[in-house]
Image 1 (cartoon, each protein chain N blue to C red):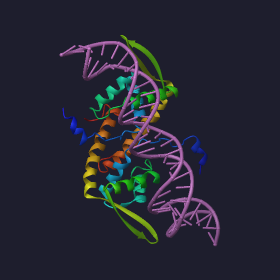
Image 2 (image 1 turned 60 degrees about the horizontal axis):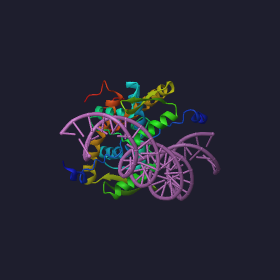
Image 3 (image 1 turned 180 degrees about the horizontal axis):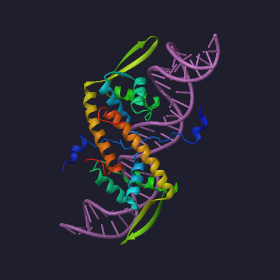
Image 4 (image 1 turned 90 degrees about the vertical axis):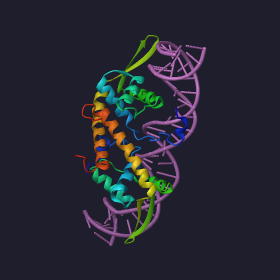
Length: 122
Length: 122
DNA sequence: GCGGATACATAAGTAAATTATGTATATTTT
DNA sequence: AAAATATACATAATTTACTTATGTATCCGC
């Protein structure tokens, strides 16, 4: 409706979540078991109320890398005429996810210490 | 003491804070007014209990960029025979810091939603 | 006087995104 | 019914934002 507003407010907020995408995907798969790529982007968008929009150029190459590394395994299914590639954590992937979550929590706590020095609980 | 342990546990946790360095520095300057680079690295290390270690290769080029952009201004002082380059926020920098802090909080809230879906408060 | 800490700086290399593009089907809008 | 948007995958080129490595120089403790 207001395309020209993009010149004033071009949604930079660039890339705060750089480096967090992998743990985010691992967490999603840990919580929801079995998901396809597009579904992940939609769920993250919904959960974060539109804040985090995962781009396809970031998502798919990362999923492929995780598959190569044996962190996730895939099953391709047809939904009508349309393909869906479902991803789920392997046993090694679940282990890796626990490690990633510990790192994530430590990182988030560190951010709290810096951004909310008063209220942050150590 | 155990240098060889680095082969097993090489502290990857790579770069979760990629993209967060700028808002972190802005927050430090907002809270402490006037700081020099090395002091920032030490304070962040202390506040985060050793979690976040800002490298010099990341710090100084970023500080120079912020100065170019008029976000910070500098005063060079001598401490004995050793130089310290003090940074402080300009008026524009304070405005920019407020924006960065809002983005940071939204980002942290989003991470909470994903990593702690039950306890996170929207 | 040697190593480690303090204090700055910059260049080369790399990881992880963004942006752009492509294919194809399904659904909604006009 | 045509056009636009949403669903669903994929990859290449580019950019960003770091790490790693290197350099200079002073200060302090042993």
